[in-house]
Structure formats: structure tokens, C-alpha cells
Image 1 (cartoon, rainbow, N blue to C red):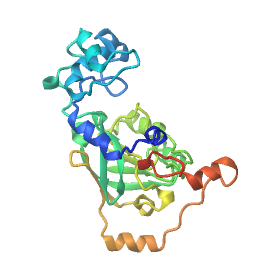
Image 2 (spheres, helix red, strand yellow):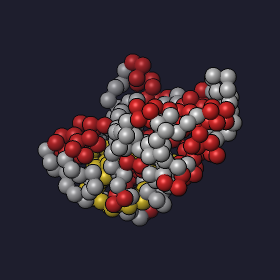
Image 3 (cartoon, helix red, strand yellow):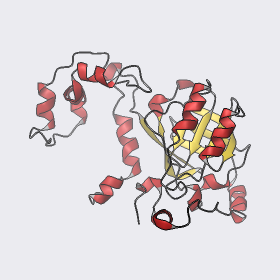
Image 4 (cartoon, rainbow, N blue to C red):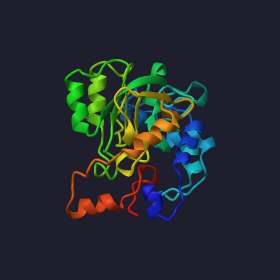
Length: 275
């Protein structure tokens, strides 16, 4: 969305979810899948991917000077398991899902293709941390138990600053065998290596007064990926009451360019662009 903004193109977060709902998951690639990128190359490469997805694509011009349909028509699919047909896809939907609810009014993102079927719907107790380092300390000390939902906030575009990547805590949770019993939500971001029910880009972020900022330990977090929902089990009255007493955590950096960035950056759902 940030790239689209620079190009003057109007692109909404919901577009990514719409595409994912309509394009099946045909290639299961590491780190969350079972094949490697080189397997895709051996199976025919990106031209073969275009051939498989041809019915879903527009016939646009490619940098090679050929259009998409020309490239797709000339391609050969050498491995039907690496690049599966639609009726044998790994998942009926694509890798990304965008969730909404009282915890993320402006949206949140999850890599649903890396979530087990067991964890597609989850209800857990919030374990709240204001920084990644606090969460890592608790995880490594084995204070996170099955049924917990780790909440890492103040790591969004303004809070990070720069929307820090939560690969360390998510990897630690997976490494401890908790990927099928513990969820993690954050206003920060994830890398492509993330596995399990890890929901990021929660918008608005904590630094901007998003609902994630008023969560407390023990709050019940409800995650429903098939129905695109993420909620905290609190009444509107309780949420409003907590906001009356809420004060943002002071920014970590108060001088220089990053302090200016904190004041100017937009929410993740807008691409974390400078306003």
C-alpha cells in the first residue's frame, strides 16, 4: 500500500483479503511449507505459476515485452505436486487473511496458510507486554503457557518506531512446541518465516490509542480466521472506561529524525506512509 501511495494508486487493505479469498494456495513453500523455492524453479518457475493462475490474471504487459497470457501459454508445469491444480490446492484460499473487530477496527493481518486447522479459531487469556524485549523475557523464562495469547504492543509504525519485526518471539513459541496452543498478536509486523496463529499490523496501533492499548492480563482474546474476526471479550462500556484512564507509553526516541518520523507516520493499515 505504501508503494501504491507513492504511485498515486488508491489501494485498500481489504483488497488483499479479497484476492486471498479467491486465489487458492497452490504452492506450499518453506519456511511454512514443505517445498523450497528451487523446487518451484524445477517445476517450471514463475511462468508455470502464471500458467496455473491464468484464469485469475489480467493480460497485462510484462517487463520482457510479452503479456501475461503469452508467458503462461509458453510455460510447462513439470511437477503437479509443487504447483498444484486448483482442485488439489493445499488450501482453498491464499496465504493472507485480514481480520477486523473491536480489537482491530482498521484491520489486522495473519498468514493463514501457516496456521494449523486447530488454531484457526482460538480463545485465549491475554498476556500483555509493552515491548518485544519484555515478551521475549517471559517466553524464554517459560512463563507463557498453553491457552495464552501473547500481546506485544507499542511496536507499530510510531511505537517501534518503524514497525519492528516479531520473528524472535514467534520463533521461540514455535520452538517450544506452543504453536498449536498459544497465539500472538501485535501492532508490529511479521516476516515470511512466521508460523502459527500470529496476527500483526493491528490497527490502530497502541501509540495511536488503538484498542490494543487498553488490554490487560487475563482479558479473553477471540480469534476467528475463517470469519475474519479478532475481538477482546469486553463490553463497550468497559472499553470506554479504560480509555478514560489511558495514557500512552512515552516514545523510546525523543530526538532526531526518528522522533519526527513518529509524529508523521500513519497507521499500518494505510501502509505506514508519512502524512
